[in-house]
Image 1 (cartoon, rainbow, N blue to C red):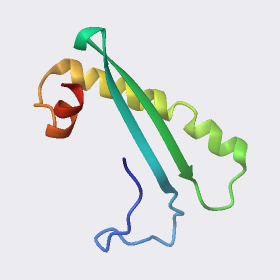
Image 2: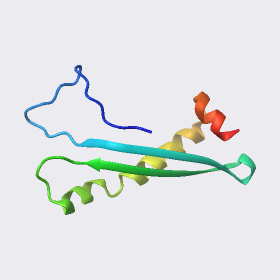
Image 3: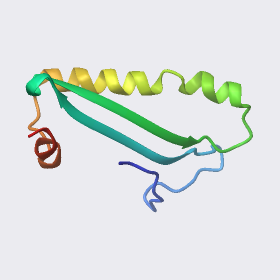
Image 4: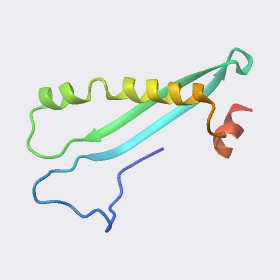
Length: 91
């Protein structure tokens, strides 16, 4: 689960409007006796500012797919040990 946070190290800028990630949840489940995984991603995002909905959707429409593809590609590299909670979920 992820959500936006305020951080003094990265203060708001006058030139930009920051969107807010209200909630993001990844659900990962093992499939086919642990040889494959199923990943479900739900995202609630408020782009903030005065932007038309069609424009926001145009920029965000491929974001979830790109995120899941990058997650898959990274997992296939096998370069990092699984996080303890993920390993626990997959057992």
